[in-house]
Image 1 (cartoon, rainbow, N blue to C red):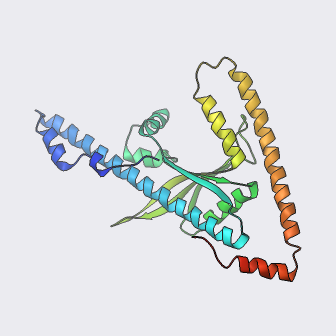
Image 2 (image 1 turned 180 degrees about the vertical axis):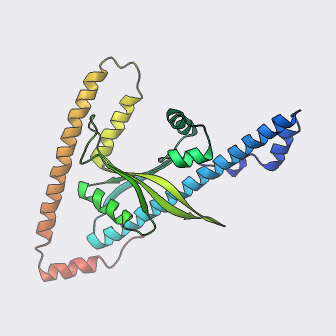
Image 3 (image 1 turned 45 degrees about the vertical axis):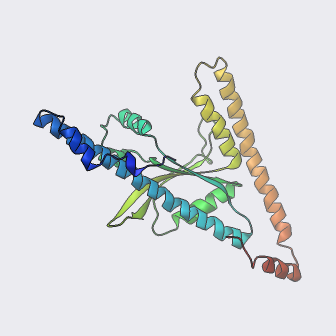
Length: 256
């Protein structure tokens, strides 16, 4: 995820220095508008960064809770990213919209992104449902590419949510894209992403077909792994009362 240094933001003193070099009121006005847009854009990206932190913390809290209650962490890893400026500009251009703060907030749903990697398919839906049940989270859109995969074999659960972010003097609802998938799905998606941005691959169609076949195998393997885990848990449910007591005692202490 991009990091922002306050020293990178053009301050008022530098702005005034630039304006003194301009020789017409029109150029001065244009420069002021540009500087306002630049500073406003930096502030908007800061807001998206804070929104990412809010949602990431929610997932971390859920993972901690489930690890205590179920003695198993449903989340394997969490990664975040802030969309690059050139990608934002390209998307707005695709929508035939000019570059403005208003259009970014209106049309760009994935400026802030979080990817949550789970071990099992049922973890995906448990984590997603728990997040959406929170009263300060609003679901904007939901696309389930696990139940309905893309033609190339891509599988993942995509959510666009709104989360309130409290700043020093105001509160603002921000959109965040959440992708939740299994470890196997993420491995496949990483390889497919490499192919998408590679040019001049002579056997590209063959690789695409192989990837589609691998996606089907991965989906089947995810289901089998879930079944194996459920069998193991079924055996654990048959513990004696003494075993249950010892198991509860083992949960008294936890790492923070």
